[in-house]
Length: 446
Image (tube, rainbow, N blue to C red; front, side):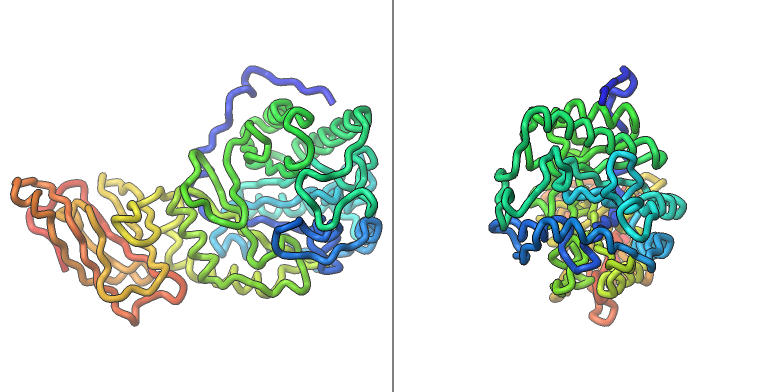
């Protein structure tokens, strides 16, 4: 596969649109869902030392399962509508996971949904079309490793440790690797050229083989030539446009654009025994914290073998949707708000057209007594309201004494807010503090 790069494509893509998206939907789906197996990792018995533990399935048994994949209830329009109502504004769909099974129409392998199953429909195209029509930014996940391909070489029960140990994997000859890498780029080319403009190319599998073997600079140039505006995640090592911490929020916000990718339960695919579902409140609080740190949350769902979204996932997305209908303004196209010492919780902000600001204070725990917000320009506060119903809240303030004694016209100080118990939201209460562009002559404390 020849790699070419023009001067125009060498410049990095604009990532400003990625900041402030808030919620994205990650979709992990493949033939393994028909058995309730974890996608790809079931054949390795999971990863040594990593939860959850998985019962290993024979490699050939796993690969052969693809022939029975027939998701007759697949309805991507319904998926898109549910995700949009939940507040998601971008989607990342698994076009191919580590097991090598292509969920798209590929001319380079018969191990695909269009050639190796009873279903024989290009679900990647249908997902892309449905979500694009609804207004989503479009991302495709592509694993650069392929445990089914003979030149990778193909995983067997005799060549892979179970559970999997990071860094210990089968290796082929140099000619095999050259052939495999050409195949991998060929499939990536199909995704980059056959599905319209892509906003995100989400690579995975960097943990097998070295950076030198992968030549990530060439992979990034390959993508840029075909999709110059697409962002690529940091698993294209040293050449990513955004970072992707997995399953946990970072302690400190990464520099530059980022998202946290996370499951609703403990597995990525549809796993029958996995009923360890996070509550809607927990998922929402994670989203709120990610946005307050300047990132996004890419929340995963694993459809069933029939093509349906699991009921617990639907219930949680619907709960997010109800909350978003009342409070979504606080998470869309906003930037991080106050420091943690100013307000003990996540917060976001936006600049108003009049030059003032609107602060959103997210109460992820029930308050005890009044809420204190520190180091605000207190004489600029014009109102404090509850976002969910728009009604006013009681508030007062105390300017910093040193500012008062010095005659500072725009003093900073503490804001005190009272929130009645009966007005708290069951998932997350959002307070709105509006600040004018200039200090008021007569404070408007209520």
